[in-house]
Length: 475
Image (cartoon, rainbow, N blue to C red):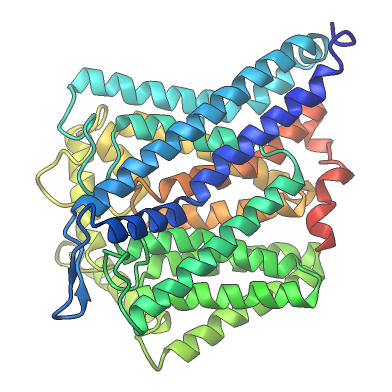
């Protein structure tokens, strides 16, 4: 059968690549799509965008503009879900016509599919605990602000992660990185103008939050975008492009400092420091460029200190907050911008319902825990959270174990995913930033899964192949 349908294989591979590219591209361009929709809303007078002309201030009233973004993200998820179905169908046909090859390496394919199997259990767990404890108010009707029901939590791994892990070639992966960073550049420039020059009527959240509702949410996005820019700067060889990526990184960090969100800033710096440590022995040229990227971040801090209270001062305050928590945990609720109190409340909710959770936003004391694993545990219970963490651990652990054999785009995606993961320890899962996490987690795993399938049980000795390192190595 394999020989009979050999001519069909390249066509199926092309279908998979195109569908994966579309599924990822529509999601990473979602802020730009929403910006265009807001422009349309302003021009036509539809929807509510609250702007105080007398005070020249903008305010987020959680009106139609917020709902419009949620509706748009559900549409984007539907498109990504359709692409995921096309990928699954094409992959199934490919497996059938290559059955001899698949049968001979069935353990390798199962091992490569391990994250999907674990995420499948995670999805089933969400449904089961919801049925056991009963459906709460925001489980199936989206919260007016957070915008996610159980169905969004259940779909993310099998839409964005699934599409991301099938971006198997370097060219489309590199193109997606450029689409992401260039679109972020326009958004960051507009955000800086909104913050320091003139208010943008399309940006209905806090000043300096761009198209997002909150400066923290904007910085969750920047935690990924800034690292992507930094890694492109590090790997770039040509002076013109290197300068472009360096300037883009500087703009992103200026926007992040203006937005004043410490957690994502720490995530960016930690991710780049870890990469610098890794590259010191393995790639001295990349090590020097990584130090330059960190130097750009430090320089922007110094330059922005004339305008805002930069993160250096925030980090110093954080150390004092940690001291308060250690010495007097009961009276340190304001530590970490109030996060300590949120975490304490979250732990109490988890103790109350450890197995099935409270449901999405279904608690009267405290707000959403600014820590994604805690948020999942409060919503769905400890077993479901452990399944989520297990899936993430398999992906990141396999990528870390094979880091020396990953192509540069694989390492780039791994660093972006690492940045979001660190940021998520101080942030929330919300409808328009969580997709970026699953996308880069999926693209991180793409090369890992490919090497496992190619190497079978000896995957730890396999390489990604010379073709996997040709595109970004040249830039």
